[in-house]
Image (cartoon, rainbow, N blue to C red):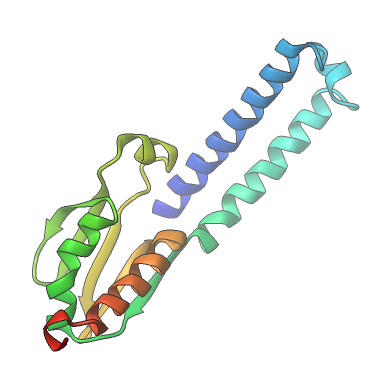
Length: 155
């Protein structure tokens, strides 16, 4: 169900982007208001474009969301996790021994990402896994692993 909701959100976002671009072009006088003049095949072209957007929207969540294993000890992860996520602009949403979730603090960024800003860190089978938008969790995972290796008490 989550996959379908994400697909629908991206479909709406892409369609709104097309509408804004076309409205700007019409307002500037670069394109006619008539659909039959704007597109070569008129409404047939519109339906073809919407079909393409639907296909892209159905495929994107497969690549846009991942679940990765975090390397390192549990004690080190718990030592650096809260402060690191705060530095990255996240606030704790849920904090239990087995599950930690974070959401972005910035309302603007939340809206831009269609409220798909949750990062989940979950303990499973003795390891910790991070799940969320691929572009976010790859950065967070590598940053956490670096912070866990760097211990200021050793210097």
